[in-house]
Image 1 (cartoon, helix red, strand yellow):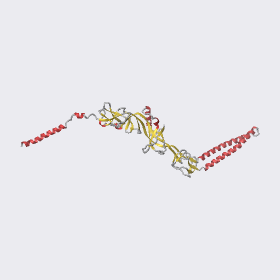
Image 2 (cartoon, rainbow, N blue to C red):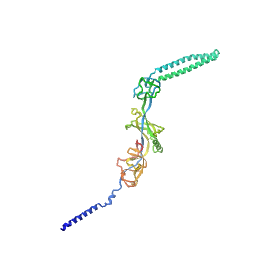
Image 3 (cartoon, rainbow, N blue to C red):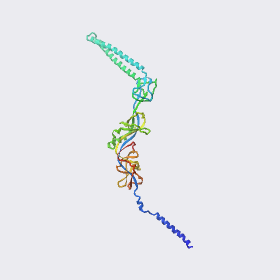
Image 4 (cartoon, one colour):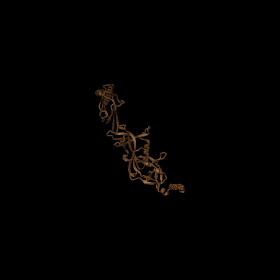
Length: 402
């Protein structure tokens, strides 16, 4: 009976002992384990200046190099149309023939008037010569000589008037065949044979456009113009010599045009509605790929930045006000926060205009694990992932301002 009463107490003591062991296992660890974790590891990139060629994508539209609107300069009926719509015509080719009959008759009449005046003029010159001699000998009166002289002068004026009428009639007759003033592609005709046309009418009969070469008119904001001028004046940008005026073209479908163009001039008049100026470039177009009115993008060179600072986009964050900043590891292994000024995106990197210096170590991985002032362990990017090699590398960009 005694043994049977003692067993419950034995079970209680055993349970208490096991609980004590379990509580001991949950107690504080040795501090040595925590000390062995050390500072967090971060991946950094060392900033090195690079030489880059800055470019800018600007929208534009193509325009014909030369445009000639064909209008009649005399009234008449169209007898013939001598071209095929949409064809390529050459300067001097016959386009339309206006009925020349009335103008030929006017020319013949003017030519006859000239002949009559010349015939009369011969007789009047001889008469004036005789009367002059007779008047000197007092064989005729002075009034008779004055009348002969006046008749001669009148006929000389009449001859000049007839000659002018003949020239005018010849000009009008030459206007009856309408010829191409320039070479190029001719569009649709607004009239057919038998149509009555009037001189200098508002509606052109057809339009010729020269498309090789072809213009590309680009708009650029005045703020952008002032920014570039200021950077050039400060020496932050330099011109790219002979390549400064080279222009590339991106078509509306995203493909790059095979031939490069040349920037010709920048207009000095600002459009008050858009606050922009027009830049005009010229592109060769032997295959007729570019048509007037096409929407395109041009890639223009702004200049060269000899010591540009580029940083990976993964290393740039923004605060609650949207201002960009980076975390930099200083020489003591401490994290420092730097506010930066971003110029634009270049590939997967930002072009930084202010806030970073050469040899700064920018954290690009592990940013979430650290705070400004914390100690960190620096880890370099693995081989093949280095960014921002220094010196002679030239990077062409075509990004918009940020």
